[in-house]
Image 1 (cartoon, rainbow, N blue to C red):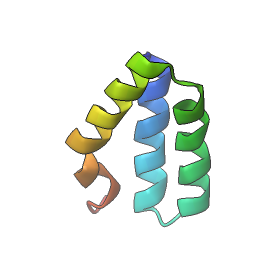
Image 2 (cartoon, rainbow, N blue to C red):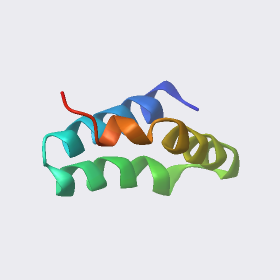
Image 3 (spheres, rainbow, N blue to C red):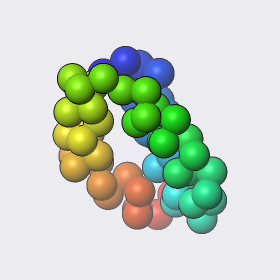
Length: 58
């Protein structure tokens, strides 16, 4: 996965934890929509591995 993609997903998780869901979705959606099939698989795995990042307390 590209560093920029990982950073966007991490930012989306941070925004979600802060209750800024619309911004979080927009941030993640931009990289998800541009990912090729290989990066998409990496994104799916990252989301599975980091689900708690979206819900934990800061």
